[in-house]
Image 1 (cartoon, rainbow, N blue to C red):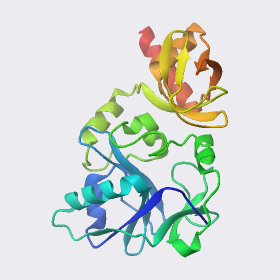
Image 2 (image 1 turned 180 degrees about the horizontal axis):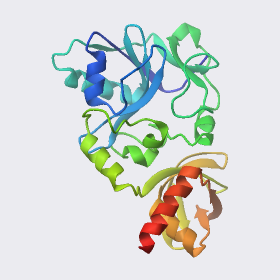
Image 3 (image 1 turned 120 degrees about the vertical axis):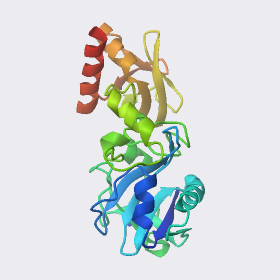
Length: 269
């Protein structure tokens, strides 16, 4: 197993662990088998992401794999929401996030390495090329593509990666998240882009229209946060996409093609 960069581990234990997560975070805790990993986040009351993470069910409770720079904030907020619940929450510096052939499938995408939380001594070597792997899988990450309270879950495709359970009980920010879901026509998404002009912060344009910006890139392969309604209009007009002034290609995954079609049809009504 190889250590993943910039990650910290929060350990939750006690009889009320699942009840705490059920009422605060975005993912479901029902039927959570030991050893299974789930993707989720804690949101602001306004529905923006404070921190997303991968959570592993253990015999004692739950281990949360979160970006190191978001860990302390997430720890403090979970303790605040704990109130009088019987839950112990601590940051364990002796554990690390690891990837490799063992562990649980990464819930965000089957092409990503399997994930595990192990003692630091069992994953001493860092995993090379993690950013390139995540970008190629179309998976944005906290710290690289966004930070606290900058994006809504649908901006980074959490709903497409099983990170939000809209049918569970209340969680922080649920009202906003559910309202955006009910609208059905989401107008901002993270997409995969390719081109020589890709660099973080570079503008994505079609003609005179600003579609969005690149959030991360490795050797001409990157992720960009786009206004999909503007991208749909550009496609109708046959306008080529550029990034940083150079020609670029946007990967039209099946889910994106379906959303663009819905946006186009709605505009025509």
